[in-house]
Amino acid sequence: MAPTPERQRPPLSRERIFQAAASVADERGVASVSMRKVAEHLGVEAMSLYHHVANKDEVLDGVVDLVFGEIELPDGAQDWRGAMRVRALSARAALSRHTWALGLMDSRRNPGPATLRHHDRVIGCLRRAGFPIAMAAQAFSTLDSYVYGFVLQESSLPFETTEELDDVANTIRQGMPADQYPHLTEMMTDHALRPGYSYANEFELGLDLILDGLERALAAPGGGAVRPE
Picture 1 (cartoon, rainbow, N blue to C red):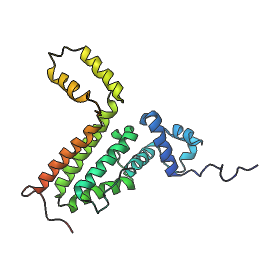
Picture 2: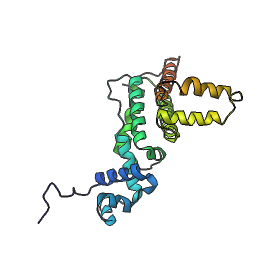
Picture 3: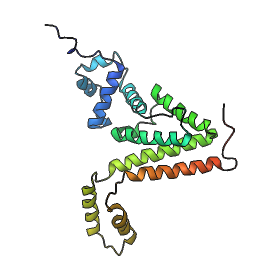
Picture 4: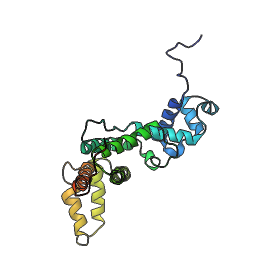
């Protein structure tokens, strides 16, 4: 008996291949992404993938484009600061879901449409706000460096919950003389171990410091250029 339409496997496509590759990377890391593993995830033979993609490099280009596509972009109605803040928060969320993408986001030589659209919209938002092109490039680079670095550091921490943080901090304190490291002791006791502390809260504070600096630079004499039409 032929399978009912509801049970039939969706036809293979580039989009399904890229989504499957992203799922493999989420589960096992990007080093595990291979044509064979992606095919296994889809329940097909590896050779069938080559009807849609040329090789693994094209698959990696595609998964990077998927991640860029998850990041919220400026809509043209927001002020530049609000737009960059929303975009940074969204980028952090996307990269936290796909930490394997950190080493790939800016390494691909064949960016896809979502990647190109992302960069063009961010640059356009900054240019409309009056950022000269060189300052727009600097702003883009600084914001991305902060987002990528924070996600990398956050994903590398040896704790996830408050209880795990307490255990790590107590282990460190027990192994070090407090009088030799008074500033580190103060940070742990009076900051990191205070009720309600979460390392994730540091992100928005740091982001606002960067946006404050960019705002001052734009407002400084000679900082902004004539806004492009």
